[in-house]
Length: 291
Ligand code: SF4
Image (cartoon, rainbow, N blue to C red; front, side):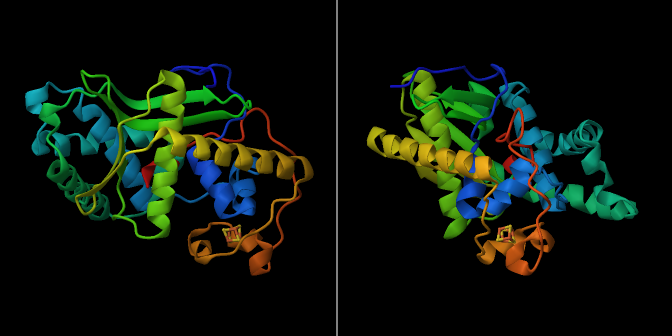
């Protein structure tokens, strides 16, 4: 078993790493990976994504309250301050409502209430004391591949059993979406297994828009196979990084790609390859985790 490199919560020498979002990008389309991780082209956040960031902040703060106060009304009251904080910390998101009437912003904030209701339909936070929220986890595999990501919430039972929880603010996915979500959860399960020596008992995805969840129990053999998959993806990324040969892989997910104008599959021309970036080509952003 590979030695853990760092426990959650700190940065142990920020260097190129594989995150679930970027690994997923490369699997979907190498050129999309390049645009995001190498060229780092800006993408216009949608209102739904920013609402996702706000909701993640609300659910993180909810557990700062005394247990008996973790009720829907208190959660709703956290939305507006969370949005103000997100705006202040991330000026690129502040322009989301430029020129929009106040009513539009108010309506958008109110739309979070449905997601909060979806959350409370799934669990009662008064009965939970998570071990960690928004936890940065890193682990280096024996092959040298550094895995890095953020876990929305980690629950640890008195018996030591671990549950990884991820909040999704979109509707419950079907087909591709579910595959992507499970890929992400297996990634976290592998990192936590390598860090703690315990295979997480459960991976739980909570879909707040429709109050559904998906629970999954990984096993060691599966995580070993998944580890080899990630190593193969990282090898392929490094090969493409050396040559600049990141090929487009058109699919129906292109409908959601911000970079079609630069994509050869749509008649565009990518900018000159800038070379492999230093120091980080795999960092997740808040937007990655806000879906
Ligand atoms: S438009 Fe499609 S093929 Fe082109 S970069 Fe985006 S995801 Fe890849």
